[in-house]
Amino acid sequence: MSNLKPLTTVIPKAKASLSPEAAMLAGSGVEVIGQVITAMKDYSIAKEQEKTQREHIQSMLEVGLKRLQNDRANFQDFLKVKHTERMDLYKSLQEGMKIAISNGDIQMLQTITDMIKFLYSENAELKMASGKHE
Image (cartoon, rainbow, N blue to C red):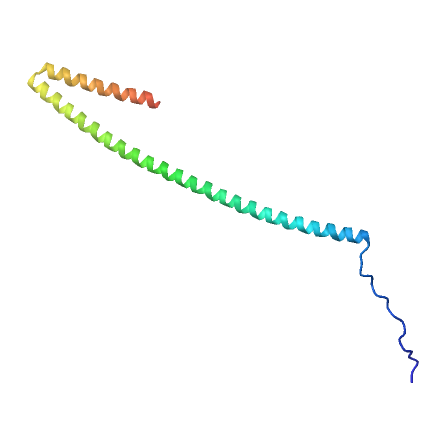
């Protein structure tokens, strides 16, 4: 046979218990992992809350924009109606002036002239109040 010797050396078993330093490190490692998990949960909650807040703000902006657009459309409709009313009134006064002049009715002409002055002064007051000057 060959020169082989039987194995008689025994490998010592590792100790099952940890040294106090190793146990301390292992305990703090578990603590750190717990803190990381808690921090990840807190981050996830904060992220979801911020997302919800952004969505709320966006919806409020959209509602405000729709309200402004609606108010603008209503105001434009009001101005069209107001303008049409004024134009009809001016046409009526102009026709009244023609009739008063053709009939020589000074009293009617004076009344119509006073109405026109009042309307123009009312327009001037509205322009002054809105900040528009011509």
